[in-house]
Length: 265
View 1 (cartoon, rainbow, N blue to C red):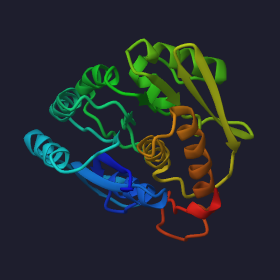
View 2: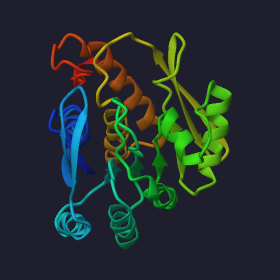
View 3: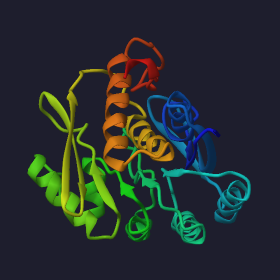
View 4: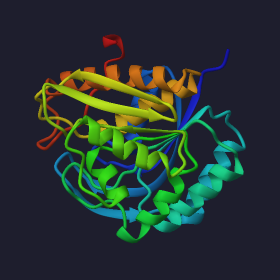
């Protein structure tokens, strides 16, 4: 039996804590072969993003076509798409290859506060949402996509998830890691179904790449043939264990990269 394959379409993080590097480490830790399409090259460390170099849209499309001509890709995770042109070529590829197991992590702002998506491209990103199996914004990203204020509690998270569901994705998972309270609560909403994902909130310094890791772990589960709810639950367990262990690494002087412990879940 061949190994499941997942593809990440995202930006490169030179500190290796987020982006393509985090996705590939997550795939490998979860027993999935990872392929990659790089959409942007960033100059960053664990503290902040200093510069972004966009990969030309036609080169993004060429990377995608080359991989689908050769690999049996079971799931796709989409991360940083920094320009409208990049969004357009990825949307065209989703249509061209009739992809179903697509996880869209709408990377808008880095944990450091650095803007990662052109403001003029947000409308294009809303259109891309209608082509994916699940979209996984955090509280700020969900609010930005809906042009509203961030949700303050679980009820508001559910309402915003339902509003995003109206854009056409199969499901919406709003990540509540930036919220408050003793638990980190995420809300997974599909048509006729709402699921609450929880884990104890751990006070740690190193949280760089949590969103990338969570979403790529979901994609890994989908590549292995898991239903979305099960893939999301297992991804929550995985990223929560990584967060709990992250401060022991002593890597970097900022938020630091996560480490991945597949034996912990």
